Amino acid sequence: MLIWYSNIPEEVTYYVTRIEDYKLPFFGMVAMNFLFPLLLLMNSDYKRINWFVVMSGIVILAGHYMDIFNAIMPSTVGDQWFIGIPEIGAILFFAGLFILRVFRALTTVPLQPKRNPFIEESRHFHY
Image (spheres, rainbow, N blue to C red):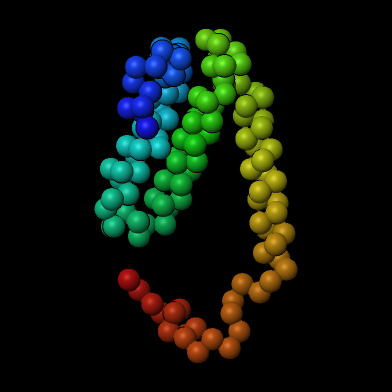
């Protein structure tokens, strides 16, 4: 799709603005959304380590936030960008709402299945 934009000045300025004024968020977003998952999650050994998968998910989620930040901020504040208390507060607010909703839903259902014939086998399973 970028090839379609190659010689249209109106469309190229979108990328030029983000690369010139937002170098750190732009290239950080590229690294977190493309390079990090491609290089580290290609190996299946890493995907078996629970804390590694959780940390990878957090990095990818932060990369998605940087993607949205890069899409919105240049057109609203120009080159006067920063990540401060409002941005961090919004992230913490929605993370808290998500955690509250998930844990409240988990309290209403049993977490261990009943009458599962393979439950003992799964307790002793090692990969």
